[in-house]
Amino acid sequence: MSKRPWPFVLGGLLVALLLAGVVSNYASAHPDGLDSSLLKGCTVNADDEITGGSCPAQQAKDHELADSPLADYGVRGVSNGFLSTGLSGVLGVLLTFALGGGLFWLARRRGPATGPTNGPAAAPATGPAGRASDPTADERAARASGTR
Image (cartoon, rainbow, N blue to C red; front, side):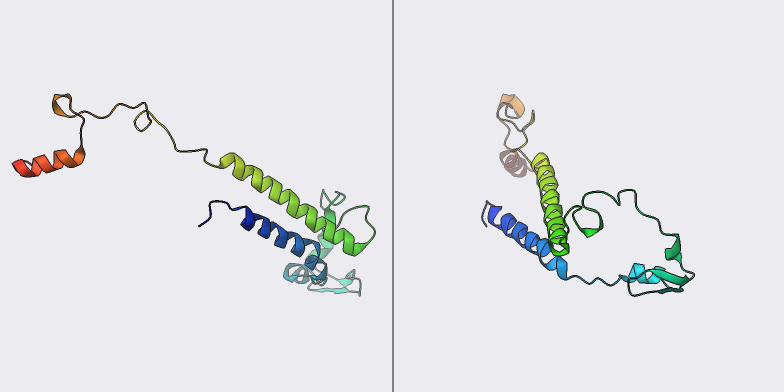
């Protein structure tokens, strides 16, 4: 297996950008399951505005970030809907990629861990009479003497 993940990462980024920038424009404009369940009991017109009845959707309020630059699946200030939605998706993918890449870069392992017992400066363990201890040699000697 290759030690360089860059072709895989860049390929995944390219696919994500294509999906977010182009394919997202063809997503259904009809409400999803949650939205449609909140509209049960109300009558709505062709623009999905509530015209009568009683349902939980009537208590809905705008989110605190409803006027943010990337709110409502678009970019504020871009009047072309197709371009606004695609640009919003591309910006979201790039922002997510940058944040995720930064977190992975911070969390990655920088090399083998060195501690007082396994570093190059660590002295070899010594056995009886100051000899360097070899567990397999000690085990063989114990078996030969029958003291195991």
